Image (cartoon, rainbow, N blue to C red; front, side, top):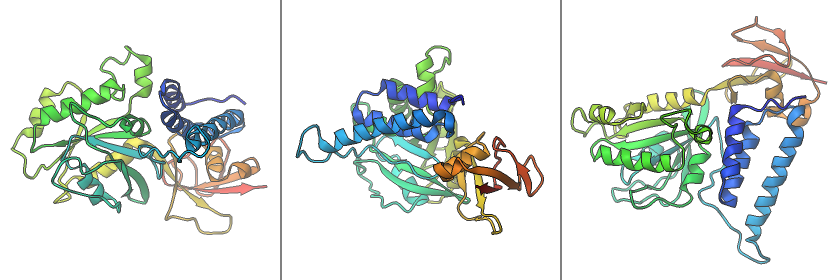
Length: 330
């Protein structure tokens, strides 16, 4: 069976090949394993990825010599939920306030700069889906934490946080210069650098403190920024725009929600599985249980955009958002 590797997998593979540290290689391998199509044609490749991950983890835990203290990379954030959105910005732009408002994470929100010293993850809810939101230490024109690029490269979406009450042009320049230097922003000329295209991440600009900013500040920023970013204006104090931010993150992740149903039982409508758009019934089976997937006999679908309720569907049936799937194993 052919592997049929996806663009997301090839992007993660490019990241792995360009990784400069063991921690970065591990993050890239985890991304490769997450996005690789799960079927017989990729089993040997999945096993190879897992072997490489085990080898790197063993090396990091040993510290390269017997008796050494265990190495912990604080910039490596294990993925969770439907996708990962990483926040980046200069000091006191409101990143931590966004995380505090949208998640239950324990966040230290302060008026002084550099209160965030390491990445802090939290889970943001959109409808019935959890999306991982990650706050990061601030950057300046002179300084950025060395491990920050690893956190950003594992992201599905990057959100540049701009404080509208501050120097918006400086903030935008610092963030885009840093992201450009690591090829994390889509290049202005998509044909210029194939590697750049693979490494780049979808990016939003989130404009904070809109309630205290001078009128027209955001319009000025848009006019003077060369890149065609999507802008979302929010206020953590009034919660204005936070719902729009959560929705856009979900839409950019481009996943489908699938509700599992056991034969003869009601479907579980509280915690859907989330898979990349374009996934099939077989992908769902592998996502639920790799070994059971090999014994999949048939499947039925409800609330589908393409078939009638309760109709049998083949293994290669493409899943649609909010579909109910009943899997039959033998």
